Image (cartoon, rainbow, N blue to C red; front, side):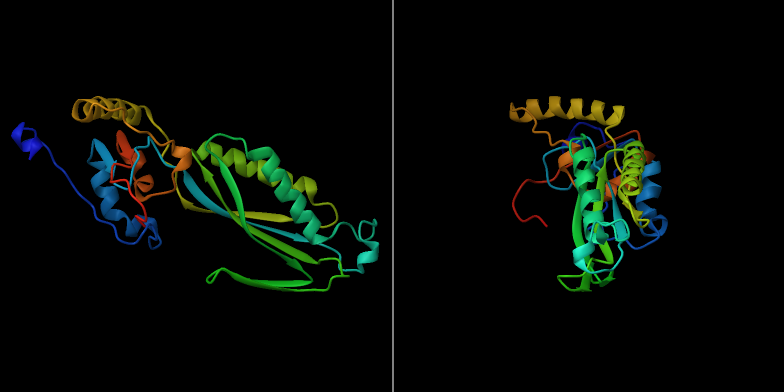
Amino acid sequence: RALHANHLLSNASIVVAFIGDEESAGRPISISRRELMKHAKQSDVLLDFESGPVSLGRRGISKWALTTRGTQQHSSIIFQPEVGNGAIFEVARMLREFEYELSHTKNLTVNPSIVLGGSTLAFNEETNQGTVSGKHNVVAKEALALGDLRYISDTQKRETEQKMQHIVEKYATKHPARIVFNDLMPPMPPMPGNVELLSLMKRINHLVTNQPLEILAPGLRGGGDISHIAHLAPAGLVGLGPVGAEEH
């Protein structure tokens, strides 16, 4: 009504997309988010109405899986040259180094969410459940750590993956270790168009409320569907929806 009253709709096109799958898009994204992409290419501004406060961007998300191996022997000879440190010590040292090297990087988080280790292990990716077996006096033969990586740009993602790969190779002493990354959602970096749009919104907010606009840093916000299309339009903002509890 406000736009109409100010004669701002005659040359405007506004598309509203309601998405009910809570970011669990089917694969490939090129099909499940095809309509969003089509309209984004024709748009000047993208507005994400997830709950506020407002943000200039979102971080991308990938998941990683780290596997290590050890020589299964009696625990009394662990650390000996012929046995090594065992798989659990190996994975623990790598995770500790991830924390040391990466925990203070702005807009970056690396989180290990599941760790398994023992003589044998099995993990079901569909159910996110795993089982292990072993004995207290046996050096662990294998270990697995799973987690996610959240980053503000593709450049930050590549640099972080390289650092994590280097750490894995450095601390794999007796047996080779392996880390694998799987992208889930791209980032929406704070581009210049977003900054200009936020400046405009600050002025409008002040006129309407006479209060400063609350801003949430992109590093404190999760992923969202706008990330799939943010690169297709000149400007966008996130978090324009209502603020409240239990919005999910």
